[in-house]
Amino acid sequence: MRCPALSDLPPAPSRRKGWPWTEESSQLPDTMPDGCSWPRISIVTPSFNQVEFIEGTIRSVLLQGYPNLEYIVMDGGSTDGSVEVIRKYEPWLAYWVSQADQGQAHAINDGFQQVTGEILSWLNSDDEYCVKTLDFVARSFRKQPDIELLCGDCEMIYTKGYVIDRIKGRPGDLARLLAGDFIPQPSAFFHRRAWEAVGGLDTNLHFILDYDLWIRMMLKGVKLQYIPLSLSRFRWHNLSKTRKYPAQFGFEYLAILERLFQKQANERLNNTKLKAYYLAFSKIAAGYMQYTEKVKDQHHEILQALELWIHHLERYHNDYIQAPRIWAESLYHIGQSYCLHDNMKQGRHFFAMALHANKKAYKALLGWVIALLGVKAYRWYTRIYRILIQSLRRLN
Image (cartoon, rainbow, N blue to C red; front, side, top):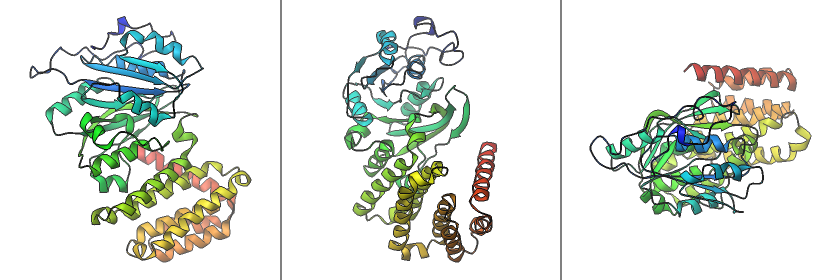
């Protein structure tokens, strides 16, 4: 199907302006510059009760001006008015359904069973594509026929649509991916053969099903291509899973790593093992930071998470001796978590251990000093530090 023009679609609500409401991508010619047909791109949108955002998602796909699009919406039985929105755009959908499903991964797998495209991706119903995304993606795949997985950058937007941050993708292999997750899912596209090679998403996963997919693809030899362009907009809002369940993301991440490293004996992967575990445990610790004002409610879970991390450091003690920086960073984050949850003595203990592991662990030294002033002072210190880091990131 050729993408419709803006004038073909239902009019945007009066309060909506700009992309993808009153602006569109320019219509592409029927053939590529070399005279070949545009590759068919198939997009699946899984959705459940996202009436506030789903129309923007649908319009950002349909207004790409792309000549060979196949678009499918898999709704999980929404009751908030989402179905009425989807029906407005039914003439331009290859397929849609609204029925109870078994979760996001299940809905996406079912959606991809319906598609016929060569290039695939899914776009969640609170995210959007940027202008001309499908044009850039198609040209990249056609320019390098051996590409099987491609990613770009991703803008992070708040509820109302303004940009608050940018998630940078970057090139890399499996070892680099494990050391730092850098494939923004809304900006990732893959060839059908890569999807079929791994059998789709693991339906047992609920939070980092995309990360698991990239790992399994790369284990099959799929190579990643990165293009330094913003391809999508990830929406940060109160009901998004990333914001609502950050600690659960970390635990699922940890489980995937445990499974992977039990099976893999690859030396290069093992060399990134500690970085990968550090990333997983950091996500868990960061997730529990939101509970700093509710210590009594979450105290047991927080202690369990910290004990798990401590046990992990003991289990791989000999490996961490060879990686003092990561060891010290891990101990620092454990100390930080104890301090944020009003156990200053334990916090200072782990700051001291971090300094012992790496004499250049200056954050641990500063943390130890601030912890002497009590929990309120320490919480203010972490807030100010976080704001400074975020400001520096935006400047870069």
